[in-house]
Image (tube, rainbow, N blue to C red):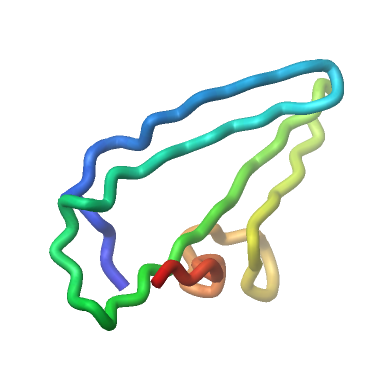
Length: 80
């Protein structure tokens, strides 16, 4: 696994209402030099802090134990 540095920052759009918060992020992957058999692994995660100060940690997958978004088990979405 390696950090991809050849792409620009994501384009991010946010919509919110009293019932919902939507965040859309777009990545331009066309600058990556990938072979046909390359599989990208993506980790989606969020830390949500309530008005009370309570924090919830969300991810597609968590490794056992304390939340660690840098752990390879969190990169659960495969993009082919």
